[in-house]
Length: 293
Image: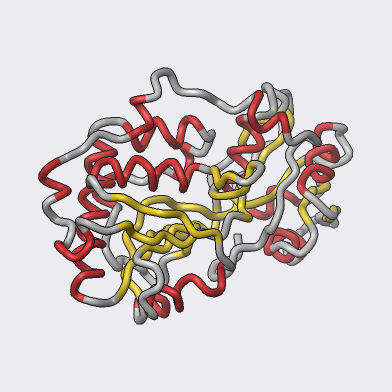
């Protein structure tokens, strides 16, 4: 998990795009993930945004958070945004744009919301507000019957670890210093699908990747994989709004809406649908501009 810039532009899981739809974890009842209007939360939306269409910026290149399925943007971030809009009673339009342009687009007034797996950190809070709603870091999975357990990076000593090329997981696994004559054998692959195959075939004992993506890989593997240990290097994700009076009011409305979605089960249902419940945060942790570093 790279802290300030998302790493992957594509993810091919288990070798077939159709598998994403056919094996996705589902949640009974469409209403359980759609959001329910809350008048108290809606009253917090600034008047300037009540009779307009909010422009939401997303870089749809990071499954399962946000990605393109055909010409439609899908992902758990998209489902959360849809439910949030229903909770607050606002209209919105998604814009698929380059990740690096989103915050500038918010400060420039082109977008009112940035919804694209942003890590909330203090330097970014100088230009935008963040409402924390999720947490992500680096996660590990193994085969279903594996005896290997991940406790920390030194758990990799004496094993082979499969990672995707160009990721911070490659850097972190390669930097592990082992004792007792052991070493970490790090095998990097051009895409996540090939890394998954290395684990399923027994060539590698661990798969190491972004924590929510690890959860997603496990959730659609039909029981082939399981998560092990807890994510490391974890940081909060935040929804961004403008650093203006109306932007701050909108952020407070979003924060209230998320807390309502936690209370009525919508938030949990959406994360369960996408197999990323490990990234859930409590209502109390849904802070406004709460970056620690």
